[in-house]
Length: 130
Image (cartoon, rainbow, N blue to C red; front, side):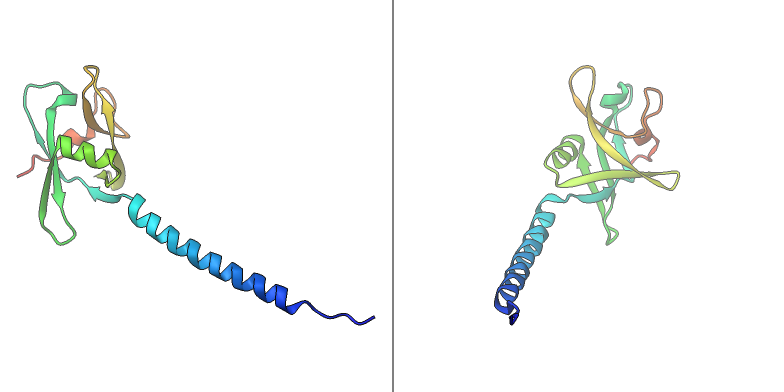
Protein backbone atom coordinates (compact mmCIF):
# COMPACT_ATOMS: atom_id res chain seq x y z
CA UNK A 1 0.00 0.00 0.00
CA UNK A 2 1.26 3.42 -0.91
CA UNK A 3 1.22 6.19 1.77
CA UNK A 4 0.76 9.73 0.53
CA UNK A 5 1.43 12.52 3.08
CA UNK A 6 -1.30 15.11 3.46
CA UNK A 7 0.71 18.22 2.67
CA UNK A 8 -2.12 20.59 1.78
CA UNK A 9 -4.14 20.20 5.02
CA UNK A 10 -0.99 20.63 7.14
CA UNK A 11 0.04 23.69 5.14
CA UNK A 12 -3.47 25.11 5.41
CA UNK A 13 -3.51 24.61 9.20
CA UNK A 14 -0.12 26.28 9.50
CA UNK A 15 -1.27 29.26 7.41
CA UNK A 16 -4.44 29.63 9.51
CA UNK A 17 -2.43 29.35 12.72
CA UNK A 18 0.00 32.06 11.58
CA UNK A 19 -2.90 34.36 10.64
CA UNK A 20 -4.63 33.82 13.98
CA UNK A 21 -1.37 34.34 15.88
CA UNK A 22 -0.66 37.58 14.02
CA UNK A 23 -4.17 38.93 14.68
CA UNK A 24 -4.02 37.92 18.36
CA UNK A 25 -0.64 39.58 18.85
CA UNK A 26 -1.91 42.78 17.24
CA UNK A 27 -5.08 42.75 19.38
CA UNK A 28 -3.11 42.16 22.58
CA UNK A 29 -0.84 45.07 21.72
CA UNK A 30 -3.84 47.38 21.27
CA UNK A 31 -5.43 46.16 24.51
CA UNK A 32 -2.19 46.64 26.41
CA UNK A 33 -1.97 50.26 25.24
CA UNK A 34 -5.57 50.94 26.28
CA UNK A 35 -5.77 48.99 29.54
CA UNK A 36 -2.32 49.12 31.11
CA UNK A 37 -2.00 52.22 33.28
CA UNK A 38 1.17 54.26 33.37
CA UNK A 39 3.14 54.01 36.61
CA UNK A 40 3.90 57.43 38.08
CA UNK A 41 6.14 58.13 41.07
CA UNK A 42 4.86 60.55 43.70
CA UNK A 43 7.73 62.61 45.13
CA UNK A 44 5.91 65.36 47.03
CA UNK A 45 2.53 66.19 48.52
CA UNK A 46 0.44 69.27 49.24
CA UNK A 47 -1.12 69.22 52.69
CA UNK A 48 -3.52 71.11 54.92
CA UNK A 49 -2.64 71.54 58.57
CA UNK A 50 -4.83 70.75 61.61
CA UNK A 51 -6.95 68.20 59.73
CA UNK A 52 -7.38 64.45 60.26
CA UNK A 53 -4.95 62.20 58.39
CA UNK A 54 -7.33 61.04 55.62
CA UNK A 55 -8.26 64.65 54.80
CA UNK A 56 -4.77 66.16 55.16
CA UNK A 57 -3.46 65.48 51.63
CA UNK A 58 -4.79 68.01 49.12
CA UNK A 59 -2.59 67.09 46.15
CA UNK A 60 0.41 65.14 44.92
CA UNK A 61 3.33 65.91 42.64
CA UNK A 62 6.58 64.70 41.16
CA UNK A 63 8.89 64.88 38.17
CA UNK A 64 8.31 63.67 34.63
CA UNK A 65 10.93 61.65 32.76
CA UNK A 66 12.07 64.92 31.14
CA UNK A 67 12.52 66.56 34.54
CA UNK A 68 9.42 68.77 34.49
CA UNK A 69 7.38 69.24 37.67
CA UNK A 70 3.82 67.89 37.64
CA UNK A 71 1.06 68.31 40.23
CA UNK A 72 -2.43 66.88 40.61
CA UNK A 73 -5.22 67.65 43.01
CA UNK A 74 -6.39 64.80 45.22
CA UNK A 75 -9.64 64.50 43.25
CA UNK A 76 -7.79 64.35 39.91
CA UNK A 77 -5.40 61.68 41.22
CA UNK A 78 -8.28 59.57 42.53
CA UNK A 79 -10.07 59.89 39.18
CA UNK A 80 -6.93 58.81 37.28
CA UNK A 81 -6.63 55.72 39.49
CA UNK A 82 -10.32 54.88 39.10
CA UNK A 83 -10.18 55.25 35.31
CA UNK A 84 -6.97 53.14 35.24
CA UNK A 85 -5.15 55.91 33.40
CA UNK A 86 -2.38 55.99 36.01
CA UNK A 87 -1.09 53.97 38.93
CA UNK A 88 0.90 55.85 41.53
CA UNK A 89 3.71 54.71 43.79
CA UNK A 90 6.27 56.10 46.21
CA UNK A 91 9.80 54.98 47.06
CA UNK A 92 10.26 53.81 50.64
CA UNK A 93 13.51 52.14 51.78
CA UNK A 94 14.50 51.67 48.11
CA UNK A 95 11.27 49.78 47.41
CA UNK A 96 8.34 50.68 45.22
CA UNK A 97 5.19 50.99 47.36
CA UNK A 98 1.89 51.26 45.49
CA UNK A 99 -0.65 53.94 46.33
CA UNK A 100 -4.33 52.94 46.55
CA UNK A 101 -7.70 54.60 47.05
CA UNK A 102 -9.63 53.90 50.23
CA UNK A 103 -12.62 55.32 52.12
CA UNK A 104 -12.35 57.32 55.31
CA UNK A 105 -14.85 56.67 58.13
CA UNK A 106 -16.73 59.76 56.88
CA UNK A 107 -17.09 58.11 53.44
CA UNK A 108 -14.60 60.36 51.62
CA UNK A 109 -12.00 58.85 49.25
CA UNK A 110 -8.33 59.38 50.03
CA UNK A 111 -4.93 57.99 49.03
CA UNK A 112 -2.92 55.55 51.08
CA UNK A 113 -0.07 53.14 50.48
CA UNK A 114 -0.11 49.39 50.86
CA UNK A 115 2.16 49.63 53.94
CA UNK A 116 0.12 52.28 55.80
CA UNK A 117 -1.10 51.60 59.31
CA UNK A 118 -3.32 53.66 61.59
CA UNK A 119 -0.26 55.34 63.12
CA UNK A 120 2.03 55.43 60.09
CA UNK A 121 0.97 57.17 56.87
CA UNK A 122 3.85 56.94 54.35
CA UNK A 123 2.53 59.63 52.02
CA UNK A 124 2.83 62.15 54.86
CA UNK A 125 6.57 61.40 55.08
CA UNK A 126 7.09 62.91 51.60
CA UNK A 127 8.28 66.53 51.40
CA UNK A 128 5.88 69.40 50.81
CA UNK A 129 5.74 70.24 47.11
CA UNK A 130 6.25 73.57 45.37
